[in-house]
Amino acid sequence: MIRIAVCGMGRDRIATLASQAGGDAVETLPLTDFEAANAVKTGTADYYIGACQSGAGGALAVANAILGSASVIRLAGPGGTAPGAEQVREAVQAGRKAFGVVHTQLDAAVPVIVGELIKAVQ
Image 1: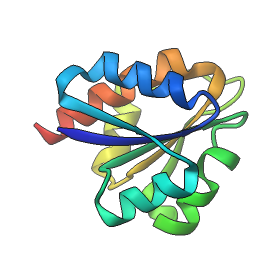
Image 2: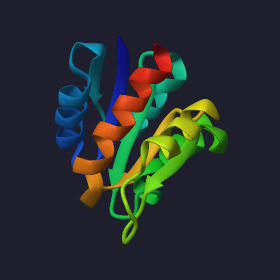
Image 3: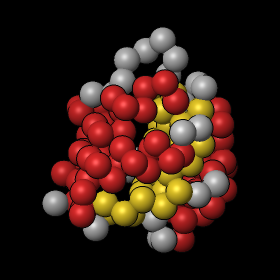
């Protein structure tokens, strides 16, 4: 089972979408950004999905500070498109654990992210 800490704008929506996309393979942990980043650092969670108006600032600032810049990536920003499977796969293969998404693209982005996370651990 993959444990995903979710935080930021639309945290409950992220949790719902992740649970729908992952089914029994995913456990979501709705937390504050500080709690979510610490959960990944301590191993309580495997991954982190955060959302804000830019997909970078509020979504990833604390994760960047706690986990380090090599562990975080913005996957979707305002005016852009939702991340594709290849983009997420490359991020996971590069060791990224924290993903930032603009809150307006949650419905498209979260299922792709969760799908790739599940594939990565199989």
